[in-house]
Amino acid sequence: MDTATHMLRTGRRGTLFEAQMALRDLRTSVERIDLARSLAWHDVVSRYRGSILGPLWITLSMGLMILGIGVLWGGLFRVPVHEFVPLVAVGIVFFGFVTTTINEGCDTFVQAAGMLSQTALPMFTFVWRTVLRNLINLGHHVVIVGAVLVWAGLWAGANYPAAALGFIFLVINVAWISMLVAIISARFRDIPQAVASVTQAAAIMTPVYWPPDRIPEKYRWILDFNPFYHLLQAVRAPLIGKAVEPHSYLVLALMALIGWGLVFSLFANTRRRIVHYL
Image (cartoon, rainbow, N blue to C red):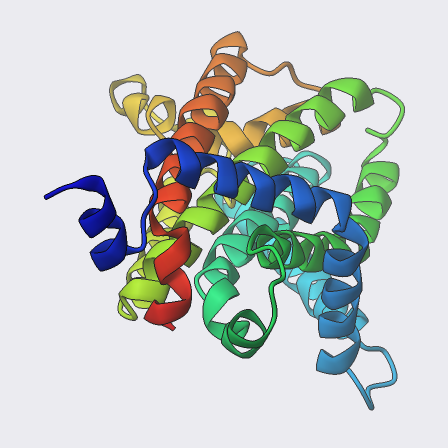
């Protein structure tokens, strides 16, 4: 098949051209990040329109859950409450951000089907929309973390620069995972259920509600090969006065490089077909 016939039948102009168009989409979305921020803010406002406290209802319910788990499970694990509550508070807040962003990422393109079919907006805009929406919600929940750190007397000894570095790694990795599930979910509508099952299993296998140092040495591999553990510990450990294991940064850096490389390649190859999937 000659080149002209291939282009006529597939609409493709070659791998290099598709990569250039995907890069253009990414660049344009960054230049118009205000649009993604506006869409994200609209999502948050519209979800709680008519409510007096709005997203603070989630913050209140999360605070009660942290208090209940912190007191009860702290007693079960025989860990002092002032040590266990900060562990659980930071764990629930940031792990919740990770799982919610990934789960909602499945619907990124599906929910934007109307806009994608009628406008020429960059597709990455809707990925940033999902991430920014959950960052806004995280901003409400961070109040709990701050209050718990002050109550437990850990705020003065927290390593905030290390926590900020870990949070940057967390957002970068969660963004490409959200993009990945968004692309696959546009084609296969069973993926959201599969992703929800994976995140539920991750919540059990990741030390969100239990101290990581309580796991027996022979099961240590569960943590070492658990990407969610490294994502969480990079933020939580510095905030509760502990050091981040050096290999966690290496794992997160490799995840970001390999993950974004694979996702960008997948996006370049499917960009023209995503709208048709919807």
